Image (tube, rainbow, N blue to C red; front, side, top):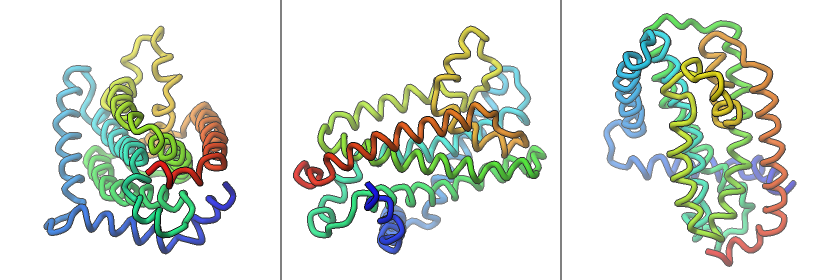
Length: 257
């Protein structure tokens, strides 16, 4: 697995170039390219945010920034996990011809989804400016929080990529799982509306802690210590499993394609 980690630096030119190629290929002949996702996400945040602010009897100025940040981070997480399931299958021609570490393909997808995240982040800036959410020193926690999310997504991508290449049905299970988790994660609703006896729904939800590491700083608050602790625990568990699967099965991936 050490080779897989160092390959991120040694092959930076490859995965970064392929990630840009994926963006250009997806939006070929499109007038505004990835900004279509930004526009659709912005419309969704505005419409659903205004509707649920009435349903939950919450001020739009409180719910919309909360929802905007949560939705943008969720698109990064769900997009990466979904595409990680098929990343080796989609890159099988390259895998069969060029002997590069599997991590190169994982970072190709991570870079691709990070570019889309940066486009969608314009929505967060717009909503924050609209409702007077000013950036402060607390906002600097955003950067280590985002770094931890990207690290966790990398290890999860390695895990999902190997397992889903061997067992293709897992891809469908992951898709259904992400759809269900979306509604159990405080993205378009706020944790304070949850009765105390159901607090475990968020406390045991890894996606909640991932999102809060980014959302709290952007809303002017410091993330709770439990969010950092849970994230470090998730990263260690994911890294251990990724190390095991990569060491045991990285040479078999090509034969499963």
